Length: 583
Image 1 (tube, rainbow, N blue to C red):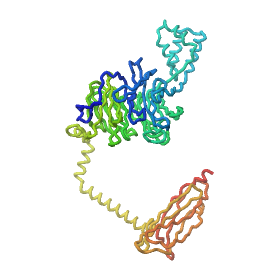
Image 2: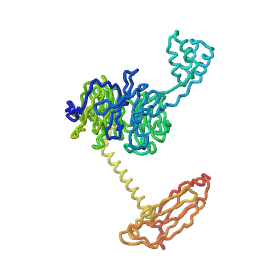
Image 3: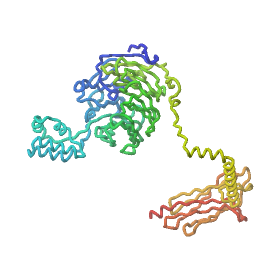
């Protein structure tokens, strides 16, 4: 590859290759980079759309040369490279989504074809075609009946019926004679495809295929048996998706749908967990770390958390044509590449513009990753079919400061100060006239509150109603833990001597409780000598004898032998016995 400095981007990129007549017509979803030979050199795999009706091909580039190409039967909707087994050498397979099928290529040769399961056919539609097959109705009546079914039925019509309804009256009879003996089938098509690691996050770990369909479903396929492992439903047909996580552990599938919303699917649910409602339709979806970056048709780039909270919004100078993630693990750098209709590619980290790349034509697809033996390679295809390869310099540095000149936009936003109401004016005059009296009343109420609080505190100390002892000679602290579901509970009292160096002895614990509700094995226990700083657990068992599903308070007293007033008091709110409730 010949390398010259690229202009217009701060000298961070090298122009490695540009072929304006490469004849590549594709989108970002149909481009991937993978080491298809196991020699450490990544190849460029492209699903070429051709003319749209013919010439669809799977092309593989090595360096600047076309390495191989295979004919595709239908327009590709997406293309991914993935590891489907643990065989050595570790060579990935290529999956191409086209129509209702996924074509899997291994060693650049056809390996397996997976077809989506058929959809439910409208029973009324079957009855109408059955009458046409038996000659009971003519084509005009058939058309009227199918029109009626289409307006009223919940299940959509098949492709055959929709095609029949679009025909002119003179072509109907020939169409009926040609198709009436064939069974009716209703088949969905694939709209987007991705990969999901199965059990490990390793770079060469086995991955499942994740596909979105026109019938608003998302399927996760087993990589070896190609059976459906999971099926999830969406409110609308998906158009773009981003997948992260592992299928056997936890995963998130972020899906942009045709209704203009973004939904987030998780492992524990077959319905969307979170929803992001956009003001306009999305045209690009990229995950950067734990955030989701969405490009919209209103020429804006927006950032959201994975729970749907909006973080920022950046206005772009032109409509978005494509988006891709830029991930450099060796530098710990993640950003978003945005292709614009004004022949530019912008590099954003959050809402900050880091770099601008000029292109000779409108960009249609972007792919960033390891190509050949270069980790930081940017591959771009253009509207005219051109192929452009750029390499990020190893000395390139990006300044992620906000590039907008002048003060921040928030500084120019006027505050919405409410108007002065009559009530506000009257209250202001009252405060001016009676300010001294109002302050004295406030101080009086504050003093009464402080006095009431102090009285309650002194009363609690005198009656030992606190879990901490106020005695200077026997400073104790206690907390209680109740374990169990019932009817038997384990009650643990953790008693601690908080003195600096003086032990405490001759202590006992007594329990006061409603004997009609509870029964205790040891309602009175002696406590051994308490060494300062250590926590002593005192355990006993409480049995609930009532089957009414009620609970009460058990009072705990820590006493000193020979004294009537307790050192500590604790009230334990017992839980309801669930064991008796179940019985």
